[in-house]
Image (cartoon, rainbow, N blue to C red; front, side, top):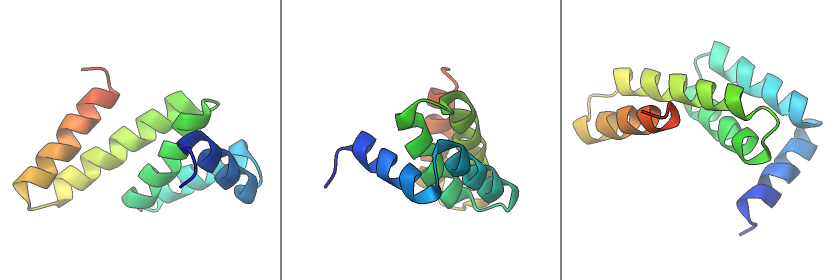
Length: 88
């Protein structure tokens, strides 16, 4: 596999640049596509340009998924990971 940063750069290139990748993340978040939001946010966090916004979007997606899941360990994972992204 590619190193995470290299993969993120290539994904951004496919999207038409980091700004377009951020637009895609925003669209996914607005559509309630939480898993895709987190995937795109991970790439943006690695690239650094939109890292603060991406961390917020990923955190919100994790909280939404935690609210939707019935599985206690999965819910706990999302809640703990969201707190870590917030620096709690």
